[in-house]
Image (cartoon, rainbow, N blue to C red; front, side):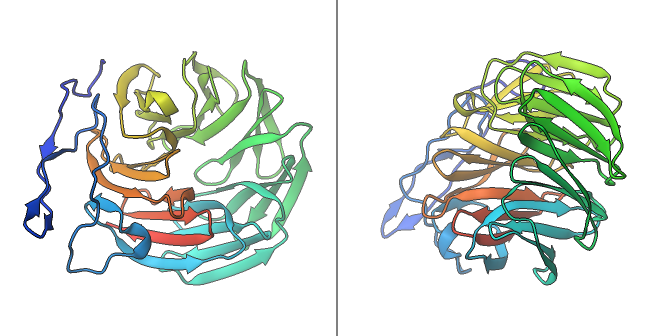
Length: 342
C-alpha cells in the first residue's frame, strides 16, 4: 500500500470499557487501515443520554438525533443544498419535499412519480430529477419544472454542478451527456462502460465518473479527458472531496478504495462487511459507509472508526451529509428520516 496512509497492522488501539455487572470488555482496535474491524459481541453502552431505539446497537461517539420523521410511503432519494442549508426528500408517492435543516417543512410538491434519481445545486436554485428511468426534469427553487426531456436509454446517474449551471447524466447507452439548465447540450461523451456514478468537483469545472466495474474517469465539462483508469473491482458507491484530491469507492470485497487526485491508489480501508454505499464531507472530515450487512460506519480520513451502528432492523436506503460533516441524514427502507449531529 502506497501513499499517505499508514501501513502498520494496527493504526490505533483504543480501550472501550463497558460494565455488565462485574464484567469489563477487552480492548477493541479502532484503526481500519489494512485491519478488519470485528463487530463486538455487546454493543449497548450505558449512557446518561437516552439512545434512540434504532441506534441502540452502536458504539463509538454517539451522535445526537435532532430530527426523526416518518414517511410511510417510503423515501426514494435524498440530497442536501449546502449554501441553502436545506434537505430535499423524494418520496415513493411522487412528492418532492423541501426541509430546513431544523426539520421544518418549507415546500411540498407532487408530480415526480416513479422517481429514480435526484440532484440539487448547493444554493438550492436548481434541481434535476429522473423519473420512469428515462425522463430528465429540471426544476427551480420552488420545485416547479422548467423543462424535461426523455432520453433514448435508461439514465443510471445524474449530478449537478455546485451552482446549478450544468447537469451531467450517465446512461445505459455508454454515454455521458452534459447539458445546461437552459437546455443546451454541451457535449456527449462515449465511455467504454455504462456510467453508474458521477460527481462534479467543487473547485474546478470537471466531474469524476465510475462504471459499476472496470472504469474510472475524469472529464472537464467541455468533454476533455483528464484521466482514465481501469479498475479491477466492483463499485457500489463513489465519493470525492471538494477539490477531488481524495476519491473514495465502496468496493464490496475490496473494502473502501482510496485514490488521489490522479486516480493513483493510496490503499484501502477494510471494515467488517462489504461496503456498498459511501458519502463523505467536502471538508475531509468524515466518511460514512453502509454495508450489505446493514451496518453503518463513520470514519475519519485516516480510516479510524468514530462511530458504528448495526441497522439490520431498518437498513439505510439513502443518505446525505452537510459539507462540514457534522450533520448526517439517513433514510431507512421503512421511510424513517433521521438527522444525526456530532
